[in-house]
Length: 63
Image (cartoon, rainbow, N blue to C red; front, side, top):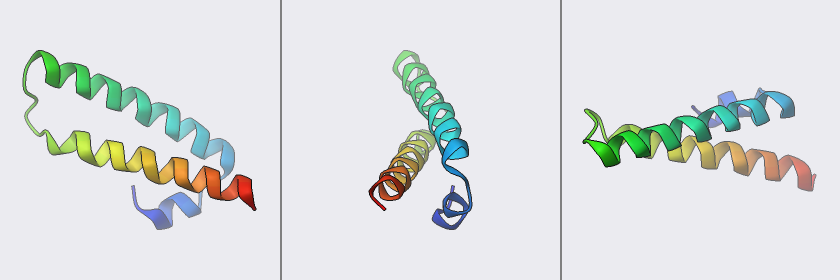
């Protein structure tokens, strides 16, 4: 998810997307622990998307 897409979402949508991505991240990590997943770079992209959304939420709270 790109930063420009994140800026266009509301705070409620960001919270929802954050919870979805955190669940996806946990599922990917568990699946990769059991047996290597086909594309391990997925884990990195989901983790970074979580960080981007969390950063945007924090930025909005501070304003």
